[in-house]
Image (cartoon, rainbow, N blue to C red; front, side):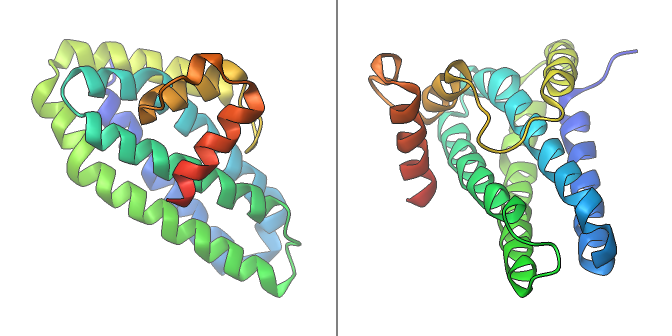
Length: 184
């Protein structure tokens, strides 16, 4: 069975929206669902960064990819903050809302620009190839939490952002560059 990468990405988006609703409506589920949400978003991001964004760039979506990569870096910082917040504290509501706002904005933009551009500029065969690669990468990264990216993954994120000189940077320098991009 072949899967179009655009459809797979959108399925993840719907699942994240469902998790947001559960976290807001059922605070008693937060200890179980917060790590699930974070793990899903990290796996989704790594799969996009490693498999989808390079193909989108090749297809002429440089600006869209750089912007999406910036939003991934911002989301990862917000997810780390959410994980560090007590589930029953008043700060959790604010941290969750910050994540919801950031991810919702990213999803809306991605579904308006990046994904339609991929449907238009990439053949169905290429989208199916990317679907397999995305699913494999996502499965490999499931369970990872924010802040656990390897140096190679940080290098890929830097490349997606167009950061020059990234290959000579240490893991910590790469992390700082990505944080700067998320803050801008």
